[in-house]
Image 1 (tube, rainbow, N blue to C red):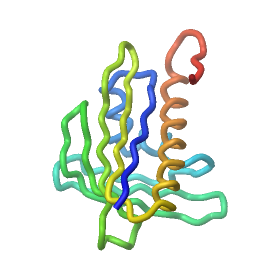
Image 2: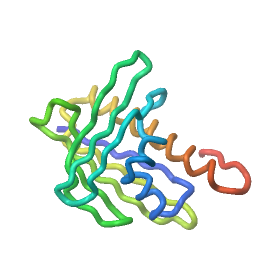
Image 3: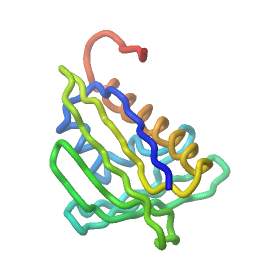
Length: 150
């Protein structure tokens, strides 16, 4: 089994980013790889609660990601299982940490139990697209000069 670590500075507080990550309406605004639309989200934010997120690709294909929350430490950390429906046999695990860095939040995603390198690479691309969406969501609402990535 493989894992990956992805991280990005987001121009918002940990509370704001945690909410964007755990509120169904907010998730639909930013979640998904580049070029993918989030067409639906359901979140039962409690340990043992489930989530479900629908991503529609440019070819029309829809993929549903679903899992269960294992740990919730608002606004510092989330731990949840990750499955592509309908396969629930061997869930992957995602740990997300929201770390205050001045006026920004460093979001660190540790995606574990990945079965092979090809899937790991697709996840890395997907998390990069998600981070781009989060940056757009919060950069649009933050006043002041535009921000650029390093």
